[in-house]
Image 1 (tube, rainbow over the protein chains, first blue to last red):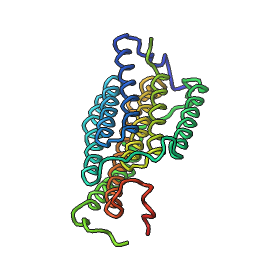
Image 2 (tube, rainbow over the protein chains, first blue to last red):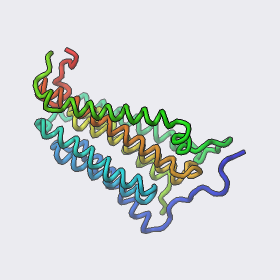
Image 3 (cartoon, one colour):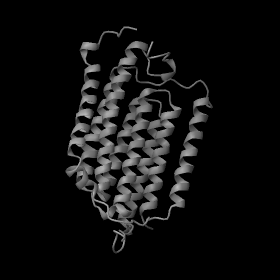
Image 4 (cartoon, each protein chain N blue to C red):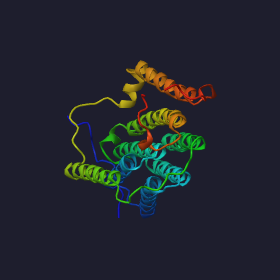
Length: 179
Length: 105
């Protein structure tokens, strides 16, 4: 018995909203491209932050408000702060490549093209939506009812990672590590 | 003109590709970390797209929850990556991965 009844949510057709979504997607792609192309790392981090802010604004239109707030206040600010903090401890400018057609560039373009083609083929070949057979419990309910301990362990592991990262970069380890 | 699942999936795929390009092409650790974060943002975008326009709408909020988890894991990974980069920078005085002979030495 299919779980889904009635129609799927329809695509956004209101012209102002569609225009805003297109503009946000263009901003996301453009600033993401700039963040990996620009050689000055300060500008690269700024472009990356612009990408994350645009994603947050897109979430504001399409997702619950909580995700927008977390994306904007937590993911964007913390990740940009971490990257700027790393930059403050280091040189900050990437030198020019030896050759404009370096081996890394060719390999990267090949990997990117293959990945894009693969995703494009999968998305194009799949007939959305795929029919759901049987009843599946909601993930949110499953996570908060059956797997509470697992979530708590995950939080501890992630917090340990963040704590370890802070300790590694603390002043106590400012001396050089032994080889 | 409409904006639906296909448009967001294409954008997500493009973001994933750009992130992978940054991860593969660039030699700077900072740009490589940014590339990884862009790939995670692409996954979050796909989760939200399926949650809003696909069958994920049956269980509202699940896509957002998964996007939240992906972002949190990515943030923790970024913190660890930044710390490792800072420590390795002290050893080698550079952020270029080509210059690292062997971190284990």
